[in-house]
Image 1: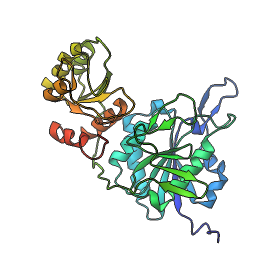
Image 2 (image 1 turned 90 degrees about the vertical axis):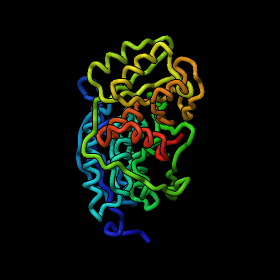
Image 3 (image 1 turned 90 degrees about the horizontal axis):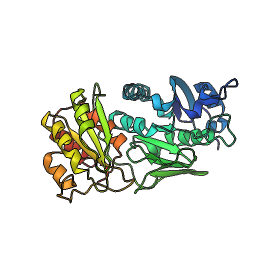
Length: 336
């Protein structure tokens, strides 16, 4: 028996721009956000079988122009929307370039246990084989599913559901770009339902009133010295994320810059340029992981550099205590 609209779950779509809402300019051919929430919903009539969807605009930007302040404001708006007992979940349409960062920030601070599903596209709305409609339909289905409750923020694309903490964009243009290296999708969307691989785990969102945007990310490569690190510190950053190599190592020539940051009270978080695997502080040679740990550098687990930066700028809105920050990064929230 088919459910009536009154019996279907209610899902709110919040539009931020991105390729999923973009079309080429007929005069120049340049692609940019041009589709409003009502048009997005109208383009996916199949969602009416799963949920009653209403939309609202939040922004109309390419995702590389999303700032942490905008991400935080989005999270606050989502909490306000999800406080409505009639709303089962939310879908955010977003560009692919930085959705892994926005989704993680939302996941960190979202107080509601209702699902937030990010819908994306690699091909704009007027392109042959546009993937936006299928991804948006799948995202609505996940947001409306009771099984998605308690799972925080997710990215839904190519009929796969990826947790915000692990999802990364792996290809510049291929629609099958999103993956969770080392873990795989958290679930899938099939013609007959929404299926998750494991039960939802207990979430512990961070209750923050502001975020610290002055956090720098520096990728260190062979023989790189410490001048850039010192410049960032002298310029007034509040936190530093280092992307090293392997299981968490950096050139010994850069270590004085890390010590410079630590001596001035800055938290320094270490990540790896590898696509999968946690850090292993084994090496005691100059720049080795054990040496860095002994200096007070915080291991970022399996987080990528951009994700670790998002986590640190949120944490710095909560505490300046390095040990509390360390416990967060080395706790159960992130794969280790």
